[in-house]
Image (tube, rainbow, N blue to C red):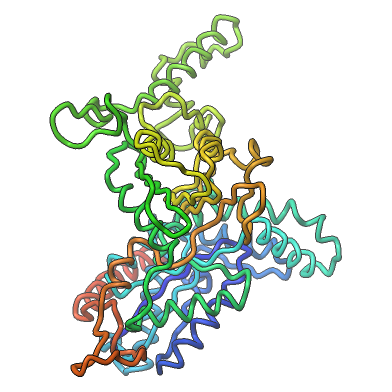
Length: 495
């Protein structure tokens, strides 16, 4: 095999080092070497970005976050650290082969850890199919507890509970930093090609072993029920023409049989949702998002009432209405109501959410959802969650978090989030684990399974049977161009 490139996304508090050690062990069995490139160690290469160490864990993490943000700001590039990592790839390749443009055989470069979607997009664009993204996860509560313990230990304190607020703040900032060019691990996580929990070492070892075997040509690994169900949900999500996002949902029975599907889009008379063609009245046909317009109307009404009661300063009350709304809601940098509850209103859109569309699909055809599993590409909003509970689902599996959802808070009597086991009397919401839909076809496509004499082949993965490849001639050129542009940008900062 030629080179392989693996990106790592891991929310803060996840013990991803365990996962990487397990990955290294499986690669070594196939005679494949690995080179780890730690992106945070490259930040110091950006002029004017000090990287000051700290012995206190919380202070150390905050300083790294701030430095990473500053590096991206100074280079005006959300993928800046990934581009620095590509420079490191060339340096390591030269050490191995003697030539930065000569690929190193049976070598995997591991980028740890990626924090922005721009980094991921850049690496996918550069390395094509030879780039694979692994998303490591653990339940949020476990991550906060683990981080609080590390913070307390770094301060030689036994008051772990006293450090939970600090740990919570770090976890929240890691998910989505509000700073300019801030890291967005929450958005990056859902881009994964393979998802694996490191909460249980034995289970993680089994999942990573299977992943490596599939990647390197094991002929008899087929999709799990969860992988199949999420692939169905992802497939139906691509039908959506919603202006904001694509979400897909699929209800399956305990054997993995499909019951009903739905995506987020506008309903049509007679049942279901619009397909392209005559009569299509989806939002893009009208040219606007009714939910966004209604939020503007509500905020505008509130401002006018405040103005009428004399609650606005002269400078504000004399501004044109459109200017007031821009300052409050955007577009533009740092709108006043960014993150406010008004942005979480869900009821004024024309679309049917994917989960509700799937429930309606089942109801229209007289199919029961009792004890089913819902596979959804995005965590359900609180409106859909209550209907999923009422429909009788036993389990919900999701990929992308949805911070706006208040399902856990509003329905803690009926649902439990991120439990490792099914809980009697509760609907269990679990993060997806396994091969992601985007790699489903590449990983599970058929390879040779029998010899000419009709006997099954030996299930022996090898480095030469790798299922994803890219042309070195292409990615070496992409690397070189990116490295040149970055070197020029760094030189300009030094002047």
